[in-house]
Length: 178
Image (cartoon, rainbow, N blue to C red; front, side, top):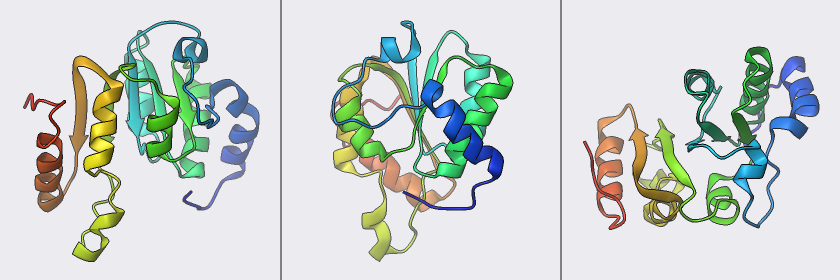
């Protein structure tokens, strides 16, 4: 897990709001209908940072449920504060490794959309092994998506964009819609 400076408000949010909006990691599939107390389209954002996009999308789409997965606790605390402030009921967060959450907690074919927005590109070639977007993870993500739905990926750097395109194109379960 990434560490960082946690404000008092973020810490309070983790303590008080986690029981309502947090998804504790367990190595078993979770019941998303029970987690969100309804059945709706499901969107996962992996690595949401401070959560601005997650919160914005959830506020624009109350008909969909959003699960944010982030290892940075201050970011999770920030999202919890925003969820409470905006009274959003369609957001849940996980403060755990996305590979384990996707592989263990989310059942196959349960997602309507996955967002991979601006992951750390690890520019140096010797660090490329640290990129969490890799062929096995792409294959795993593809199994969690329903047929005909979207996996959206974006990055700011052209070299990583080319690498991401190659990775995603190499997965037989995905088709480039762009």
